[in-house]
Length: 368
Ligand code: GDP
Ligand code: MN
Image: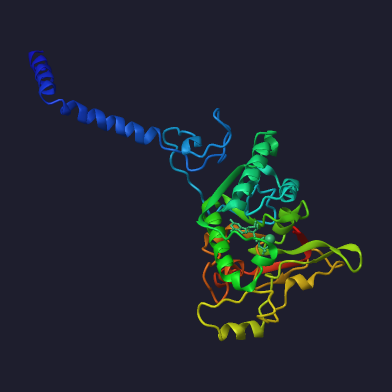
């Protein structure tokens, strides 16, 4: 008894003299508590969650606090499948759209897609210019409407990125298609696509659908249809509706010429190019004589007809998420004299994946 009380007196005296002896261990306990009990979850259900102080909250505080012992998330990539039975297997699809303009028609077409919403995530990247400011405003408004509406209509997650680089301002069709701006423009687009996919791809994502923000019409079963082909990469054929002044009637014409098969001439041109030169398809100045999928459309043909491709566009392309996970990206530099989506197809092929297109399966590009 005596020894114990002596010890206690001693202890109290010690603390009075050197308060740090108590504060040190106390600080350690608090630190341990903070570390284990306030760590955040790796994924939140929504990037943007309804909060008392407004719908769009960009801080990390939307991420729910965790229970102890729940701060490690395991994902077995061997069990993550990308199969033709995607809906049945509840496979998660990430739809990615670089967006310089927001079109209502794009949004309504997106909302018409019949793939289950709870399996759908969306990702956008918006340029840092005037167009981008306006697009972002409209996009946020559209998202707010759907994500605060009926639960069953909500997308499982939505991510919006703002580009970290300055963007070219002049985005009119005739300007952005001029051959001399292609390298710079396509390199910027490639970087934007890379930022988007590497930020938004989850460890649970099975498929990535690249859908340009000016694709305003597609079959509502777009995802199920593309998935059913079970290909690493498969591209729809991108056309455009227009009014034929000569025939005085509505008509359609090919729009995207980046879906192609390599040709002898294409290879020869590449062979004689300087290291940093690129071939962009669809320009008379560079006659590659590559067979272009756009020209293989047959109105009476089978929609499921497949053709193997060497280059793809970005209009409507479905990619097994593993292709990106394995490292296939959009080269913002000349890769085998190819850049952006065309370079992506080449890179995927170098990784051992096959690339396909559906010449008779049309999606439609906006007509400016
Ligand atoms: P085109 O149809 O081949 O002429 O190419 P677009 O200009 O339509 O670009 C393809 C996609 O990228 C569309 O969804 C555009 O909205 C989007 N886009 C175009 N320029 C930019 C840009 O500078 N930054 C981002 N983030 N998206 C862009
Ligand atoms: Mn476009």
